[in-house]
Image (cartoon, rainbow, N blue to C red; front, side, top):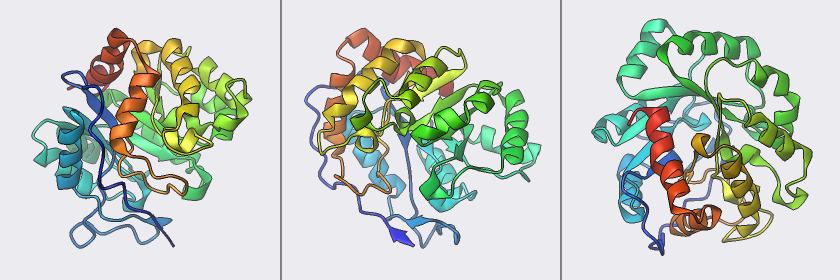
Amino acid sequence: MKSCLPPDPHPVRPVQRLPAGACDAHCHVFGPADVFPYAPDRSYTPPDAPFERLVALHDHLGASRGVIVQASCHGTDNTAMLDAIARGNGRYRGVAIVDGDVTDEQLEDLDARGVRGVRFNFVAHLGGAPDLDVFDRVLERIERLGWHVVLHLDAQDILQYAGRIARIKVPFVIDHMGRVRAEAGVEQQPFRQLLELMRNPLAWVKVCGAERVSAGRRPFDDAIPFARALIEAAPDRVLWGTDWPHPNISKDMPNDGELVDLLFRFCPDAALREQLLVTNPARLYGF
């Protein structure tokens, strides 16, 4: 089983200040394993990244709010995420991972505790596509709660599952700019398909994961054209996040302060940044 590198322990202070109410719409808490054990069938083992360290990072970066996304290493045990949301006293919302056996009562309990969506992994190194019958069944169940679904896809999956994505009836959020490869350019077919997908009023996208898109090393500026194109395509349905603590990074571990600086290069316009960081996540997550 693969072990993950720890995040950069020394985030720089961002050059510019984030606006009041800014939201890191994609971050994680992992463990601590002696309190919140990792799933036995996980594909990777992260270093512990507990709630206290997440809060310290957000305070350092100037992020007022955050969305804690359940990751596959904890499986369907959402306890660590729920604990963090509760301890955040309204600062955090969550995205859960559930299975096909989840009951309406369990979903309502998650909703009451600050969860606003579910996540499905399609990424090959995390086990590939989910059971699509379970996928359809869960999406039917969350519709009445007003939740959304987060789709963690590889670039080619955007093409493979385009028909199924088009049939989704709840808002859906594409993680990490669809994990397109920067070296293939903005004209690559998966990215053109992603831009086309953003014409769907239910489609949202996160302009995060630049280190996963980039072909190079920090500061990952080759991701800028992709982020700018997505912001231009749907400025009212774009989110940003750090992806702290950056699980499964095998290239150059990002510095979270530098990622804030990169965001300002993604989106030089202050009004658009306000939308991206404050207005959009407040609308989707009910802050």
